[in-house]
Every structure is written in C-alpha cells, then in structure tokens.
Image 1 (cartoon, rainbow, N blue to C red):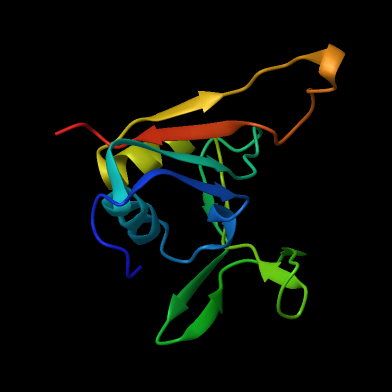
Image 2 (cartoon, rainbow, N blue to C red):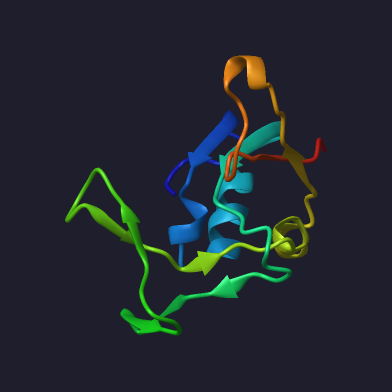
Length: 131
C-alpha cells in the first residue's frame, strides 16, 4: 500500500483473507498503516471441522498453482468470482499471531432475538501494539 506508516485508526476487511495469496505480507502491511492501538477488524470463513488451515492455491512467478480443486466465491467486481486460496481452520488465530506477533481476538456473539446465529459469522480483531 502507498499509505504512510501509522495512518489509520481502524482497517476493516470483510471476507477477503480467504482470497489472498500472501496473507502474512497482507496483514503485516495492514498493521504497518495502523496507528499504535489501531484495530484490524476482519471476517473470513473458518471451518470448525478443520483443525489446521488448508492452502488451496499459491502464486509462483505470476502463475496460480492449484494445490486442490479450485473453489470460487462470488465477487461483485471483475468476472464475478474470486478464487479461494485458504480454507481457514481452528488454527487461524495462531497462524496470524505467528506471522505478526500480534494476538487475534475472536468475537462470536449469538443474539437470537436479533437473528445473529449460525455459521461463518465470527469477527476477528487485531490491535496494533502501542509503542
């Protein structure tokens, strides 16, 4: 990103990280542009039946290497589909922390009176350390 260091108070990504080839680079870049104490708030599907994350595709010399049968999600831009690069498992928080040194907090609030219940609605939060 072209933004200077310590620019934003918050950075939100919704259902993006399962489509990124180099997640460690992406989240470290997000943390770079956050102000100290700033938050990266994100959603991404996590598969509770997966103990460990599965990488579905990688990128080498500009070419996609399909490690598993390609899976696509709907996408409002381009050709209308986005390649899934990772199926996130129960190790998501540990992976992100290992790549950044920043812990991930998981929010999973059920409020059936408001219709908040079901699968794939966790919200993850990373806070850039204060200096």
